[in-house]
Image (cartoon, rainbow, N blue to C red; front, top):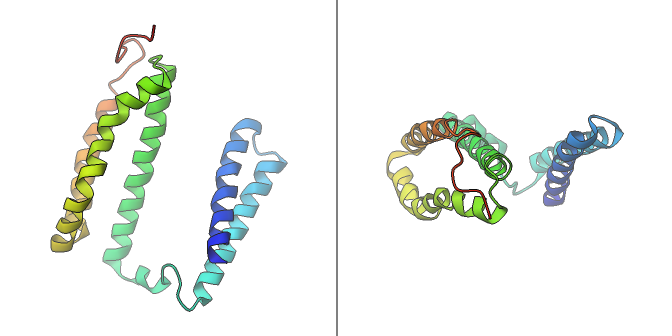
Length: 160
């Protein structure tokens, strides 16, 4: 039951964001946002009373855990936003095909395939803070370097 509520909340939230971009905050997006909020609230209530919740609420009382989750959530939101915006920029501004844009972005995904086992061991030995700080230290200048791309400097020749 709790997974259904979480799914409804996420689906309604995503649909609300998409619809509000098309039609503004008219009746359908508002209804979807309200549905998402109600389903999320119901999910939290069901989780609080569950014998075996997905994530026990008392773990958020541990400062290190809460800090690690907040840092990881922030970094993931920024990186996923960057992937979305960069892919659009490569296609719209730099006039790459979707395939070319995907291939251009491919090197960014190699570390995602290689590093998790290594970082998992590192976190096991040192805790999450060094890994999170290192991740931010590497990601910040890399994302900053993306701001140097401009529309008058194509990143590759236009498609033929």
